[in-house]
Length: 398
Image (cartoon, rainbow, N blue to C red; front, side, top):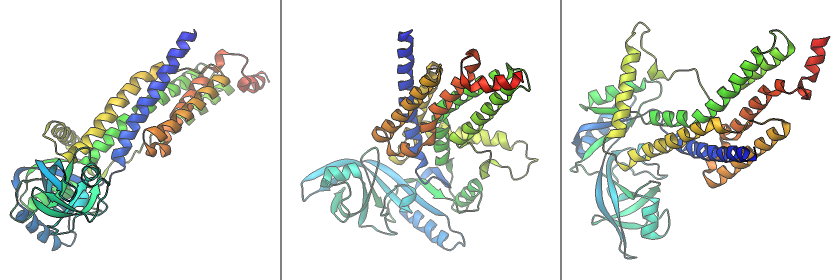
C-alpha cells in the first residue's frame, strides 16, 4: 500500500514537472507580439532595391502595411579586432521594420547601412557583455556599429540590405488594425507581385497553448465527470444531488477560467457570408498546409525560434497528459490539504527554477488544488463519517 502511495507521489511530481515545462514553452510564444503577423516564404529571392520600392509604395498608402523583407545566410564571421575575438554566426539581411522579425530594444533604422544587431550570446563572446550598444564589430570584413541586441537560440547577426543585395526570400508583415488579416496579407502580396506559401506565427502559439493546457483540461474534466456521476447516484432533487450539481458547475467554470477558454472565433475564421458552406473545409485545408510547410521546410533562425517552443510544449504537455490518470486520489481532508500544499510548493519552485513567467500562470498554480478538491468531494458519499454531509442527512430526515 505504501509503495503505491510513493508511486503516485512520484507520478505527481513528474506530472507537475512536465506540465510546468510545457506551460513555460507556451508562455514563451505568448509573450511575443504575434498578433496580426503573417509570414510568406517567397517562390523566388528578391533584392534590396525591390524592398525599397515596396517601402516607397506603402508610404503613399492611406493605411500602410508594416513589413520586413529578409533572408538568412550561414557562415558569416563577426570579429572584434580590438580584443582579437571572432565568432561564426548566421547573417540576416533585411529591408523594412526589423522589430517584426527580431525583438531588439533598438531596431535598425531605415537605411542604416552602418549599423547591425547581434544576438546576446554572440555579443558576450565578442565583447564580454550581453548588450555592447555602440561598439564596433566587423561582419564579413565590413565595419559596423552595434545598434542593439536580441535573444536567439543560435548565433545570429542582422544588417540592413543594400539596394544591390539579393537573397531576400522571406517576408513578414503585420496587417493594419481593423482589416481582415488574411485578406489584407493577400492584397499586399497581389499589389507587389509576390507569391509563395503563407503561414501565421500566431497559429503556432495557439497550438502550443492548447497542448500545454491539455493536462489541466484532462484533470478537471475527470473531476467534473466524477462529480456528475456522484450527483446522479443520489435521488434527484435531494440535497446531496444539488450539492454535487453545484460542485460540477463550479468545476466547469473553473475549467473555462483556468484554461482561459474563449467561445469567440478569431476574425479570419468567420466567413464573409454564412451561406459559404465550403469555407470551413477550405480553411482547414489551408491551415493544415501552412502547418506542414512550417514543419517541413528548411528553417531560418527566426523560424526556429517559433517552432522549437511549440515542439517543447507538445512533447512535455503530452507526457504530462499521459501521467494524469496516475495522480493521487485524496481520501480525506488531511490528504487533500497535503496534496494542495505540495502543488503550491511545486508551483513556487517551478517559477523560480524554470521560468519567472510561471509565477503568474493561474493554470499551473490552481489546476492541482481544484482537481484534487473535485476528486476528494466526489468520493465523500462512500464514507459516512464526513461532517460535510451530516447537515444534508438531517435535512433529508426532516
